[in-house]
Structures are given as structure tokens and as C-alpha cells.
Image (tube, rainbow, N blue to C red):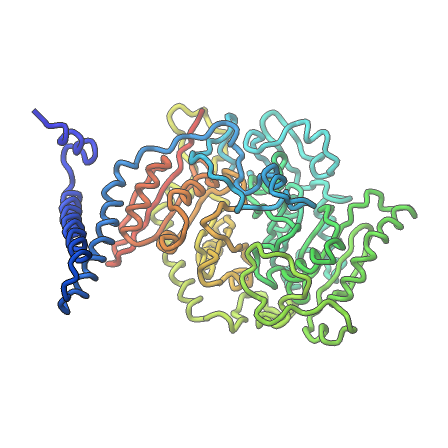
Length: 615
């Protein structure tokens, strides 16, 4: 008859425990004996002050190492008992975005708009659970069909919100039975988004918007992007848009843009800098974005200046609803007067004005700042250009001494290293690694990821075309080599390149290539809505985070929150870290497999798929 202890071991390890677990238990026992023996020795040492021999120093070091080894072995030994699957959250958290709690922010004294800002420091300890999709959630359609048609059950927006909205873009969306359709001629501004884009091109001296790339406009920061109509058009021109908008509990601009497969994230102009480096964007666009740029002593416009590249453009379409008439002109002039004064002070010139659209151009000559009149806005002090990760807004001009000060008009159309702050050899080595790795991913995963999802047992017949990967996040982007490899392979994906705040800051090189990128602390939630990415990739991130203050389980819960059902996770790391990650993947209910790269190294791949947890 089996003893109770044998039964408990059978539950932990199974009827036939693997040899590795037997060895691990043996090592744990030996370490425990060493610790117990050393602790008793320590007790005698404390009561009997006998002269110690020279060997004592080495013995104490061995005792300390044994204690560390014991704790590590103990944590590994207890892991199997913690593999219970994490519970699902309630319905009220289907669209939960941590760090954006207006009620808590108000109670903490935030006001003047700051209550709508990101405050992770106030985030209370929340129940650890898996956020489930809404009842009517469906797998998004394949790009580019998914750009123009989305499932209405996938986003938190109601029919009443469409009908009550005053936005032309919202009014011209088609709300059908269970779909929202976006026409290619969405009514942004007056005659449609294409006419509007062509108007901007002509105002900056181009023949058409197809010449944006030739003029140096490769990426655009789109503030308050509506539901992504302008961004979708820019993508068709091979220009990279990044939509930012404030957190919205319902009818979110960011959520709908991401659902359409367009780059977007939650961010706003309130009290802190955007998580982008100085000189990041060729154009900043604000069409009826609702921001009064002259407020806060001009610091909001100074933040635009910080992220705008030399020679770049600031496009402002005013919120005045009536384009004609003296009263409208007076209102428009009153609104722009403080901006006019400020733009002259920061070396911007008003390039053109047509209807309600104004375009300023940032100076190409850094010497402009030294020739300004006395009392002008000061330049930021040297050493100010550190990582801009939600730092308070500043009242000085940034970026004037950076080695990347190169006018966008002087830049060649193909990417070239232009910054002495970065190592060319490292960049090209990284790119070559990802060229090879991506081809290996393709040969390994093409039947699974980059083809139509098969019908699952019990599913309804899906409406064709099926889903494919579109929104990709590289959680530890380094130099953006994976993004570059995707482009070379002509895959129809875009990548959010994330650089961890405590890693080397390679983000300037990433945005220099015209890619979407952002700084982020992975000990905090990412500023996006649930179910917004098709694929998460991380190379070496878990080893990097092992030395940080954050819980690895919380990182996996956050990955699950932002990953779409049937989405994929590809992790590359050391074998020990990957084994621990595989156990965590089991807890968040992912299907997971470890792949040996067969190259003689201790690196392994962990490939996971998030299941579609239906109600």
C-alpha cells in the first residue's frame, strides 16, 4: 500500500518522475543540509569567541553561496505546485487599461486635465486574472480587408455614439449588423481624406502626396487621429503614421485604429513628455484634435518642437466649424495669435494657410536660436537630453545640440547611419542576425502563423478571408532589426519597436529609419487596450527583466492582456529562462512549445499561441 507521502510526490511529479527532477531534489537536500549545518555552526560562533583559522573566510563565502543556491533551487522546486491556471476576470474588465483611473486620480488631487493622464504610481494591487474577450468578439479580418471592415463587437462603441457624434469621420462610417465599415473616401475635413492629404502636399510645395517620401516625410505623428482615416491613407503612400490619443472608456480612437491594423497608442499632451526621443518625427499632424496649443506657457507646443525633426512640418487644422465669414475669421485669428508669437520665438515659419489648415516648418538651421531677440525662450541645458519617459514638460527648447540634427530635406531616401551616437557595426550585425532569424521563423511557423487560421471544432463557419498577423510588437527591439527584416521580406505587418527604459537607448536609431518605436518600462502596463496585437516577440527580454523589480508573472499577464485571441508569442532566451517562461505560459493558458535552435548555443525559442477562450 502506498504511503501518503508517496501519493503527494506522485501528484507533484507524476507516476514516473524524470531524472532531472530526481537530481534536482537530491541537490536541494544537499543544499538544505549545508545551510542547516552552517546555521548551527554560526550559532556556536556567536557564543564562543574562539580565534578563527584562515580558512574561515572561504568557508563563509561557501556558506553564503550555499544559501543562495538553496533559495534558487527551492523556487524551482516549488514551481510545479504553482502551475495552476490563472482565473478569468469578470465581464467588467473586458476593456480594462491599467494606470488610467480617473476617479483615483481625482482623489489624489490631480486636476486641470491631469486626472485623464497616465498614473501608474497610483495603480492599486489588482486581482491577477486573465482578461477575456467580449461575448461577440470575432477574429479580425485579414489585412487589407481588416483596414476597411471591423467587427463591431471587438470595440467598445455603441450605435448611439455614432448618431450623437459631431465628427464627420464618425458620421460617414457605416454601422451594419455586426460590422463597422470605413470607406476609402472617409470624410476627414471637407472633400475627403485623399483631397485633404493632397492639399497638405501642395501647401508644402509638392505636386502630390505621392511625393511625401521624396520630400523627407517618412513618419507622421497623428494627434487625435479620429478613427485612423488619415493614417490609413498615409500607409497606402508607404508613410508610417503613429496615432496617439487620450484614454477613452468608450469610442476610443486608439482602439479602433489598432483594430484596423494601424499603428496607435494611448498618449496625450497634458503634463508629461511623450515617450519618444527628441527629433523623432518628420511631420506632426493635428486635425481638430482639441488641444489649445498656447496653454501652459507654450509648453505643449514646445513638446511638439522637441519631437519634430529639423525642417519638419506641423500641420494644424483648427476646430472652427465655419470656414467662411468674418466671425469665424476673427475667432480663428484670436485662437492663433498666441501660437503665431510662440512659433516665431522657436524658429518656426508659417509656410502656408488654406481654409482652416495652417502649416509651419521648423528651422533647418540650428544657428537660428542664437540670433533670436533677448528674452526669447531659452535652450535646454546640456545633458538635458536623457530618456524622455513621461518626464514633466519643460519650458525650454530641446534637441539643438544633438548630433542627429539633420534636416529631413537633406536626408537620402534610403536609410543611412547618420548619428555618431550609435555604433554602425552593431547595427549591421543586428540586422544580419534578424534576416537569418526571420527566415528561420518563416520555415518553422509559416503553416501556423502566416497562413489562414483553420476552422476549430465547434466554431461557426468563419467569414472569409480569415485572420493573418498584422500588428506586431517587438518588446526588446534593440536596433529594429526584426522590423527591417519584415520589410525586406515584404510582409504586410507593422512593428511597434519597444526599447526598455533600462536597456541601452537605441530608440533614436529606430525612429531614424522611419519605424514606429517607443520607450517603455516593462514593470508597468503598456499604454494600449486589450486585444490589440497579433504577435509579440522578445529576444533576451526575460533575462533582462530578471534583474528588475517586476514580477515575471505580471509581465506574462500583461502580454496576455494586449494579445489577441489566437495571437502568437515568440520568445528567444537562455534555456533556463525559457523553461521558466514555459511554465508561466501554461498558467496563462497558452499552448506552448520549446524549440532547440540546433546551433550549439544555450538559446531556445518558446513559441506560444493564445487560445480563443469563448464564453
